[in-house]
Every structure is written in structure tokens, then in C-alpha cells.
Image (cartoon, rainbow, N blue to C red; front, side):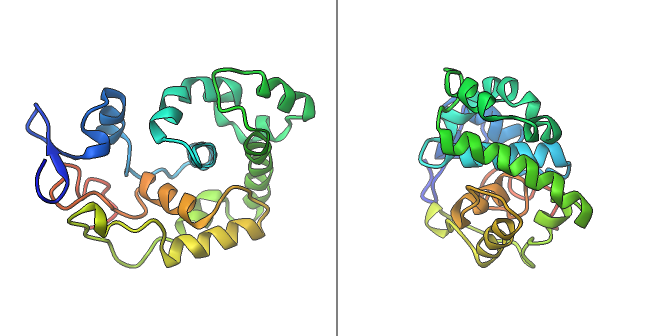
Amino acid sequence: MTADGVIIGEDGLARPAWAAVDPLMREYYDTEWGLPVRDEQGLYERISLEAFQAGLSWATILRKRPAFRAAFADFHPDTVAAYTEADVERLLQDPGIVRNRLKIRAAITNARATIALRSEGGLVDFVWGFQPASALAPSTYADVPTQSPESIALSKALRKKGFAFVGPTTMFALMEAIGMVDTHLVDSHRRGSSGVWA
């Protein structure tokens, strides 16, 4: 590990410690994390998974993502919005997902809120409207915040629109995952790869 917290892999590429060992996490970091998500279904999925991740490790959620996608109709908002209490009970019996009643209900609530936002320009424009004006440039993990003024504002705005499990820390994680903020360490091989920041 270098002094700033990146690990040079066998392939010679520098990654943060969280993405350096587990092959699934490394693949996610190399090919998905931090790249822009600008479609409604994809963004709704990320919001849902970030909510399920609260209090758990992202590796756990990533391993369960195929089961989540099966359980939540590939995170198709219109389908999930029609889920009933019977569906909640069914999902609570699904060992492939995180069986938390509040989080399952939040996914359904958020699907309905996503649909409601369509009349105001849609979820994608709404969320991306909170993109910060400038990029971060973290050299070490200590430089990476867990929330920001923008994630706090996004959290409040989404709650006003009826979303649940969208706290400021969860929303900052979302913003990192979808490329709205670039918290790749400056020495990482992925730094600047989102195309969002020049």
C-alpha cells in the first residue's frame, strides 16, 4: 500500500483498499463505480441499493444484487410501485435479499415517488441538479467526506418528494457511485474516468 492509501494490484493498477482484494469489488470499482448513471431505472436501482446498504457492507449488497434485481423486477419503477403488502411479506421470505421490512417498503415508496417526479422533469434531472460546482481531489481516505452540503440538500429535497432512506450520508454514497462527485483518490487509475469533471 502506498502512503496515500491506494494499493497497486498485480495488474499494476492503483486502487483504494476497499476495491483491491475482493474480485467482485475490484470488478465493480474498475467498470461501474463512479461512472454516470443518467437513466431513471438505473438511478432508482442505485437509490434502492444504497438504502438497503445502510448499516451493511457494500460487498454484501453487490453479492445480493442479482437476487435484488429478481425480487424487484430489475428495479422497474412502475412494477415495484404496484407492489402490495402481500409483496412485502413475500420479499421478507426471500433469503437472497436483505430482509428488512422498512427498507423493502422504502423501495416501494421510492418507486412511487420516482413516478410522481416524472411530471417535474424526472428523477434523473432532479438528482443531477444537486451536482456540486467543483470536483474533490482526495489524496487519502481521510480527505474523503461522508457527506457534503449537496448531499444534505439532496436528502432534504428527496424527502420532501416522498422518498425514504435517503439520508445525507446515503446520498453522498449515491453521488459517488453515479459519478456526481469524484472521490477516486488522485493516484487511482480510475481518477477522472467519469467524464463529468474535466
